[in-house]
Amino acid sequence: METPVIIPIHDPLITPLQSAEDAVAGSDVQLMDPAPDQRAALPDDWLDELASGLSEQGWMSLDVRSQLGANLLAALKQEVQILDRTDAMKKAGIGRGNDLVRDRSVRRDKIAWLQGVTAPQAALFEFFEMIRQGLNQRLFLGLKRFETHYATYHCGDFYKQHLDSFKGRASRVVSLVLYLNEDWQAADGGALQVFNRDNDLEVCGTVLPEAGRMALFMSEEIPHEVLPANRTRYSLACWFRQDEVPLPL
Ligand code: OGA
Ligand code: MN
Image 1 (cartoon, rainbow, N blue to C red):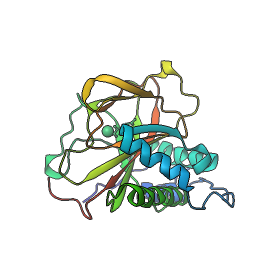
Image 2 (image 1 turned 135 degrees about the horizontal axis):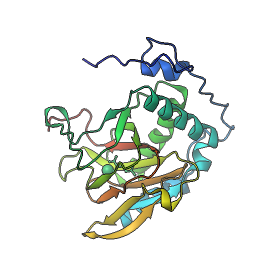
Image 3 (image 1 turned 90 degrees about the vertical axis):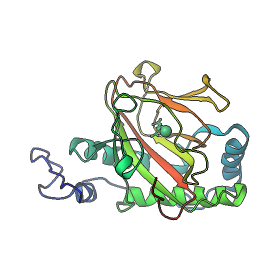
Image 4 (image 1 turned 120 degrees about the horizontal axis):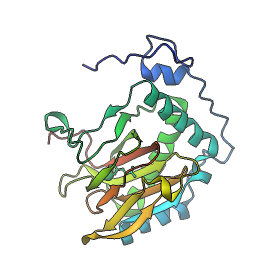
C-alpha cells in the first residue's frame, strides 16, 4: 500500500486532501495547443541520428527543444516542482522490491514515477513511444515498453558512477534523460558525466542539465555519474525495456 500523500495546506495551488497526481492535474499547468507539426511523427533522419549515436558511440546528447516545444518543457518543469513541494518525491533506491537499498552514499536524488495521465505527461509519452518504435525499426532492440520518473537533486545531491542495468537481464536497454532547468551554468554543478564503455576512468562526455537537453545511452554499457548539484536540478529519466513485465531480481 502506498502511504497517502499529505498536501500542505499553505500551498495556494493545491486543494488539501487531493492526491499529488490530482494536484498536478488540477493545478494551473497550461498546455498550449501544440503547433500543427509538433505532434506529427518524428522525422526519419532525426530517428536515424539517434539510432546511429546509440549503435556507434553507445551514447549521445542532443537538444530536443524543437521536438518537444517550450510549452511542454515548461509544463513538465512545473509538474516536478509541484511534486517536489508536496513531498510526493521519494528518496530513490538502488534495485527493486525487497532488494531496494536506499544507500545515501551512492545516490541522493528524489524521484516520482510518471503515469502519463496529465496532459504534459501524455504528450511526453507520445514522444517516447515514437522513439521506442523508431529505435526498434532501426536497431531491432525489441523494446517493449518504457518507464519514466521525475528526479530532483537538491543542493549537494549526486549519483555516483553506475550502470542502469546489468548485462543479460533484458530489462533496461536504452536510457534517456531529459533536463528541465533554465540557465544552468557549469558552476551550478550537477553535470552528467559519461564514461568510456571500455574504461570507466575515462570521461568521454559532460552534459549540463539545461532545459531541452537530452542524453541517450545504452543502459548496460555506459557508466555515468551525476556530479553534486549546487542548485536544485530537475530532470526526467526514461528507460526503454525489453521485458513485458518486470522480472523478480
Ligand atoms: C539515473 C541517472 C542521470 C541524470 O537516474 O539513473 O543516471 O543526469 N540520471 O540525471
Ligand atoms: Mn543512471
